[in-house]
Length: 430
Image (cartoon, rainbow, N blue to C red):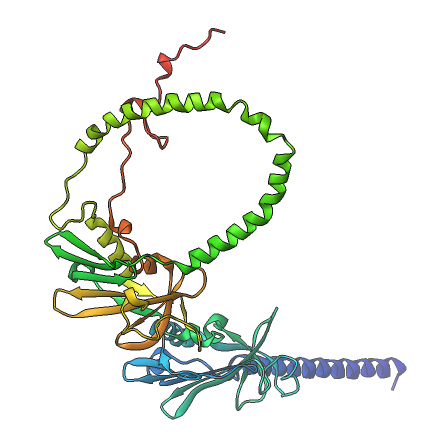
């Protein structure tokens, strides 16, 4: 065989081998890509709970790191907290969580082994362990770990691996137990209210509705109004003033007060002149009295029925802002004691159908917020002063405010629409 033929044959063999190599490599690559695609899409663990199944959930468990476990259970149509306390649960918050389970899913893989559990906070005792039960079966059992640039890490208990979760809303899974509690205290329609009674240290109020109007009576307790907190504050203020005044007095003594007193006779003369004018002012006072309203039939001259409506707006959908801590001094320990004898304030709202709700208002918790409870519930809530102040109010809170008469010539005292006419102004010529 000629050398040229040998070379040509060798080249042909090399080309054949090269083609076979590339064909084999491309096939292997395609196979790997196909396998990878299948593993990242169809081989991911399922953690989605569709709505139909979510409606059948009967128990929820939350355990965040070393914090105490929280357990919510459905009893009948209502949800309750059964651990670590016994209390009514907020059904709206639970509904939000259950509705979100349909969007919860795994979308990618981080590691198919258990090696990175500690690194990504998905090992036992770390992260947020969430379990949802459908009867006695687990509908979902996962541990949510760290959240990074690739997303929220999750471990599916019973399946090795670390995955990336989609649809996770951390605020729904990391709540404190008190934030799972039902904060609603009372809810009613204002139009259904027939009467309201308030008893506090000032006395007893009775408000009755006839048609669209409210009538009101107030019976004073006859006891001096003692406000210990105010007295303490005043005492502290007095002490501070006493400590500060000596320095000021010392400074004033150096300023030769006796010489200043020499001019006082002139001031006394001015005061005498003013004193002479006062009797003349008193002569005009009867004219002011002529414009005042006569006492109402119930004897409460300045009573304003609109204030009762304001009070009802503060109570018609009363929600707590907090709950009493164990051992707190709430002032609700003896609700049988009359408010005028040191017991809590009492608000009784009676409806047209004869039913009523009784709310006791006790001491302050923080600032002006107060502890409250109902006769038919052992729960002690905390409400804002916006509502609580009506229960502890003095009569003036239910009275008409003195209106200041404004002369039309003076315009609107609040900067209203009586603007001057620029054409009437005598402006200097340029």
